[in-house]
Image (cartoon, rainbow, N blue to C red; front, side, top):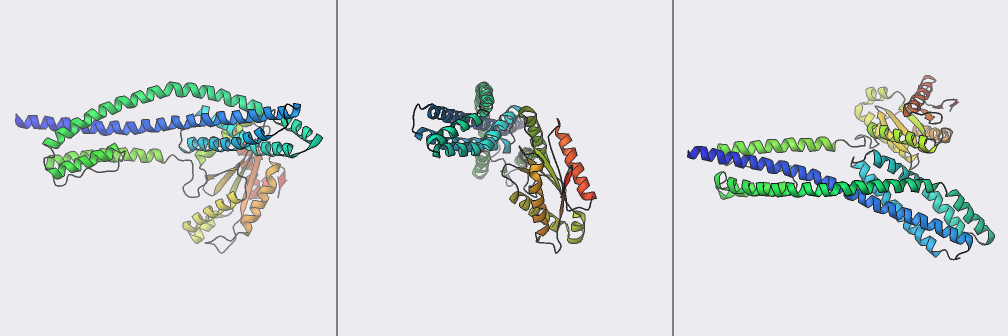
Length: 425
């Protein structure tokens, strides 16, 4: 009878510890979700700031134009606050993307943020130029700025619609999330107390064993799932229990590692990976269809890269890929997006740029690569480039296909060339 009771108590303690560990795991997931909502609330705040200051600047320009007031102090103040708001807004959007917590609604919103970031420098330049002008020239310049900024109103309207939907989403989700966390913490706390009392008395009778259990539980409460339960000096039953708990912890850590591997950058070169490229080119195509803009795409291929690997080894080949990405990033704009397409192929997306606008840039890049001395090679490396733009197309796959066809022409006609359909350098 005593042995049965002891076995039953062991079973209860084991189930309690398992349940507590699992509950703490899900609490971490909920913590991530709460952080996600907090980030989006921060984005909403910064979006309000940007909208407020842009509208205030517009109103200030109208007042100067109609002579309501002559001083431009308030406009300059709002210009300064607008710069800070756009910077904070961009950081918030970047955090959501890099943490992999974006959704379709957020991507649509981020497109508008990208547009604001792109037009912001020109907007600031035009306003400063208008404020610096004097006499009749100032009135003309202010009118020009007002007329040129009318297109921004549509973007501001779209952001306001997003913020309404975002408020509804956050207001609906946060009470549910906090309720779930409160329930899980109450249950896990009770289970923790039960597990410690039973296990400390029946399974960890010595002081040293109890300290090991307490250390293990404290690590779990702090979110450290890498800790191990050490019961080497205990009896066989305790060792088996500790081994089972450690196996469970390993499985939890394995799932955590698998989730963390879903990143958007290529681990070798540091460029964006294919997953991120597929997402961004579809986003650019949606923006192109919606606003009538044009973007370009280029595909870059290293000439005879297989010979580099065969002659100098794969480590030298990896070094060449890393150096190539550095050269590409040094010769593109901050708004351009470079990603590893596969193997030795890379792609660059040029937002709001027709194909002829990238021809000079690609040719300069080709010459830079040809003249560059790669660290692990004693021979030059060249690239072939094919490019296309979205004009007349309604599908991202059509842009990729045309750029790929241009790349094929560049390679077939002798390599070390930049080809855009109808133009070859």
